Image (cartoon, rainbow, N blue to C red; front, side, top):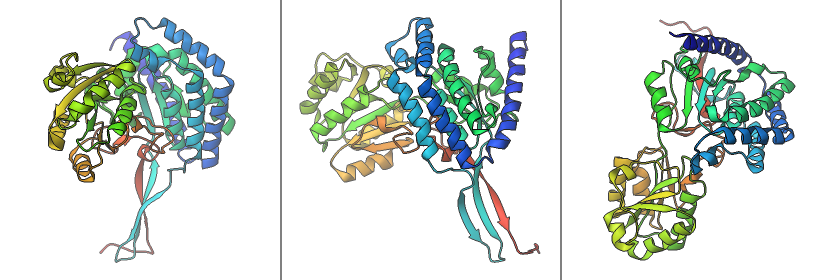
Length: 421
């Protein structure tokens, strides 16, 4: 191990041990104390909005060669800062997930078994570019009784530090350990490696970012990982779709915010409706600044669409680009999604309930929607207050990860003197 890696390992060890000590306190903290930390953190964010914006402006200025999508993810605005504060308050208003009885039953011998929710412990959160994740992740971890070490992208270090300072104000006001929420003390990539090797100190790693980050975490981690794949989301417009609804939903699903993982990246449209509807959809999206990659059948309807390759259909654009394919019914749409999708979020637009059920039952993705925008794949929209990420794996949690998903459970067994024969 070289000197840089050794330094990172020492820094991580110090942070993780402080987090474990804090986790032992926060796991048993009463709900009012946790809620006070969150509401006071929200108040601090509002008081320090100008400082946060200045820090963010410095981050944006220092980041070279930003794409429009990356700039959108990195940039904070007064509205986004207010949304962070509101998010903290919304999480504070949610029921405390810790200590819930998840199940209870009595055996013939009179023993009472209870499955009770408890925090996971220490969470390592590794994320890219979006500084608001600092507040969202901290809020959810704190409310669910977990300590968290946050390692954001190097591009957002100033923004994250300014937000973190507000969260520490909240913890201090509530008399809770400041080490409950920590940010990485260095932007060096070696710190990420130290987090991934911290078995016994960190209980769960959650990566939130692009394919490169998630791949590295999955390959190198010696700690359990709750990961999400790319957000290669599809909107399928079925032959029985209401055309006006299809136009409105697709425009929102693609163009509301192109850089979020719930943005639609591929339009699938039934051949029966495509000749009449596809030109209108293309015109709508072009007016909003969208470009296209289309298969031969779509280009036969709208001739000036650029040709699509298999690589295009496998690309999470995170930009104002939409892949387009004409399909022959639900089965064909499902086959395309199975081949190219990332099991994140898919939507069907149709007035045919049977077709909708076939589609929703046929996808393997974490979230399926019927007659709604894929951009509703968001913890806040699910009523979770916020999300720490969108899980696409098949273990522990799927879809938006909120308070309940940041808990595990233990068993309590209550007897009256029973002995085992």
